Amino acid sequence: MSHTSIGGKQVQNMSNALPIIIGITGASGSVLAKKTIDTLLESSTPTIVCASSAARIVWQEEMDESFGAAIERWSDSNLFQYHPSQQINAPIASGSFPTRGMAIVPCSMATLAAIAHGMADNLIRRSADVCIKERRPLLLMPRETPLSAIHLENMAKLANLGVTIMPPDPPFYFKLSSVDQIAEYFAYRISVALGVSETLPDHLQYRGPEDI
Image 1 (cartoon, rainbow, N blue to C red):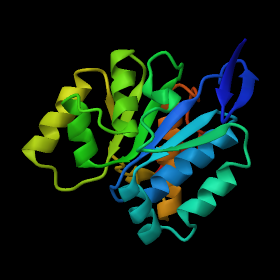
Image 2: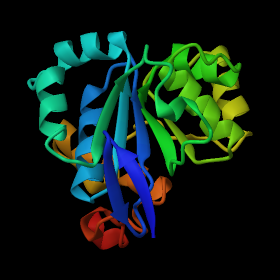
Image 3: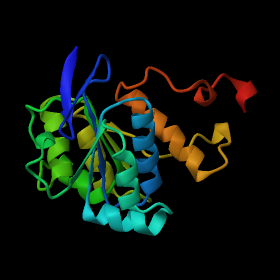
Image 4: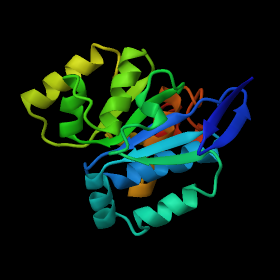
């Protein structure tokens, strides 16, 4: 059994003791970040969130709930901690601070390019750089279309380093009827990819033609 300090509080449990880092950048798709954080906290997973200034601007444009209100709501859990991207001295900037890995949701092309070229000039990029050098799980959810050759080369470079590239392409065969349902699907996919959950919920597992 291990202990991890989240927000100055000691969190103790077995399988989910180490936190997951969620980075939020200025790409469109704030609902993907919201659903992912909600899902992690609902599963009693310690969660450390880091958002850029651009992410907060996009959130304001896309979401009904303000970013500040979301932070207050998540902060009701002692499993939650928040750092702005300028806080480069936060614990997650060091490889000596243990985590289970990181997801950047959504991930802008600027952030993806910076990580691919070793540029760790803010806390989101530095935390991703730490995951790569420490060989911890790192997942990027790029939100851009169409993709240029530069974008694809950067993704391929990171994929060859073991980074999971997960574009938010919906599973049309499930006939999901809302943006919230699609965001929920990817929140669970992220949980599985980072080892928080072993499988997707039953209703999001394809069982054959009868599901179509």
